[in-house]
Amino acid sequence: MTRSKKDCKRLLFSGKLPRDHTEAGFSPKITNVKRNEKASNHSFFGELKLASFASGLGKISRTYRESLMAFIFNLVGIVAGTTVALQLGLFQVVPWAIVVYPAMISARGVIGGLLSGRLSTGLHVGTVQPKFFKNTKTFYSLLRAVVMLTLETSVFMSIVASLFGSFLWGATLYDFAGIFAVIMATMTLALVVISPLTVTVSCLSFRHGLDPDVILYPVESTISDLFITLCYFITLNLFFSSGLEGKAAVILLGIGLLAGTVYILPKGVHEPEFVETIKESILTMVLVAFIVNVTGSVLGRISEVIGARREVYTAYPALIDTVGDVGAVVGSTATTKLALGTLRPSFSAISSHATEIAGAWGASLTMFAVYSVLSLLIQGIFTSATLLRFTALLFAANLMAASSIIVISFVVALLTFKRGLDPDNFVIPIESSLADGITTVSLLIALAIIG
Image (cartoon, helix red, strand yellow):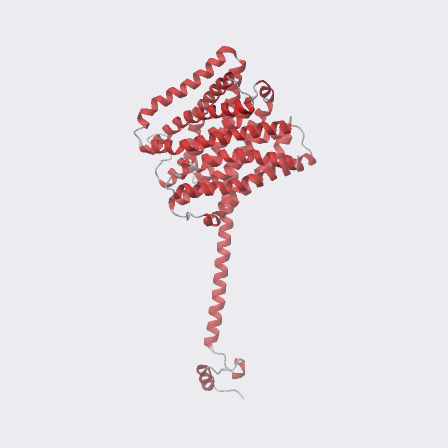
């Protein structure tokens, strides 16, 4: 016997409705609405989580693609490495040349990193325009600071390299003169060629809708490493193999850098941005000078371990480039987010930066596999066995180096931002020099483990 609808309503509002609503012959609409609302909520939150997951994958994919597009330029580093492999005989004549080489790469990387970081952030916040001429006061003040920093860095590198040399490999006064002249001349050539290219890349990437934080430093560092390698070995050969004329040419290039600095200094000292950049960068330069000379000493140790394994030398510049680029992408995107207020200045916020980290790191692993193939092919020793062994060696070095430099880049960005400093004056210069050292040490550890 079924109950009437009136009885069901009375039971419903009294709270005594039977659990089996069907026995009443009536399915309350209120219960159905609640069920529908609950199902709708589950569906909504499920779709929201799915959309958030898809959005995260999309950001990782975009960072991966843009990083890979930028990291592809690191293939030029294979050319630089091949140049190094071809100059092994020069290292026998000039023992300090192999030790100073990483310092040269890092020195230019520090300056290029500062220029890249300031340009990319300036383009995002509007203090720099994407053009060469009729640009902002900030832009021209930055260029003057780069000239001054090139001279500072050259002097610091020369002094520290000579101090290291006197203790570690018995450098003489003649060695000091050679180190100073070669570093000054190489840095002058690099300044004239690389800085205009850095500005060009920043303008073109920004105009075409690409993110300069992802594109600029990886491209600049690769071009820089190639040119600094070519300039370094040209300068070495001029100084040691071309008689008095070669030595005179090298010395004149150094004098040119000194003259250029004297020319821009009177105007620069009256610009607050110029003075601030120089002041904030001096400590960084001193720190970097010591770091990169340690790197050079480790590379000297690696050269003793690997002997004539040219594939390692061939890949080396590309390896340190790519690890430095990972740190640059992570650090530069973090500094931009901090400047825009979209990233909390806390280490726990690294989780909200995971898409940039994952995309850049994944791209670096892809490139390490490519370097393994190309290095073995160039040296004519490509087999399946050598490929597996060398790729395992490079991947092991990547896992150690990239994970370290990601944390370092993020922490440096946070600490400098919290202290009211400009992170762009610190993040890339510090991480790029540390990346060179960390990658070199990681490579030495991987060689000891895998061989």
